[in-house]
Length: 72
Image (tube, rainbow, N blue to C red; front, side, top):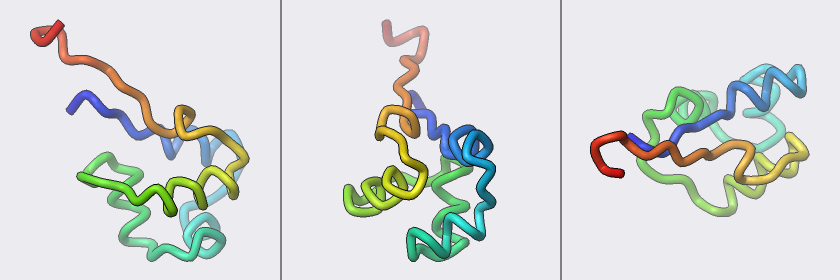
């Protein structure tokens, strides 16, 4: 999938655990884990906004587009 989720990178930069982020964003640990591992198929803007507020970052710091070579 050409959309890469860099949530783990941002969490490491902020020295924040998944459970701490889960509590501060008010999202279940399971749903946050699905997002972190890149298995999520969608994310609500309100969730993305909450994550960006807590991690003090931009949406582009979390989500990255990496085109597949054969589709260039």
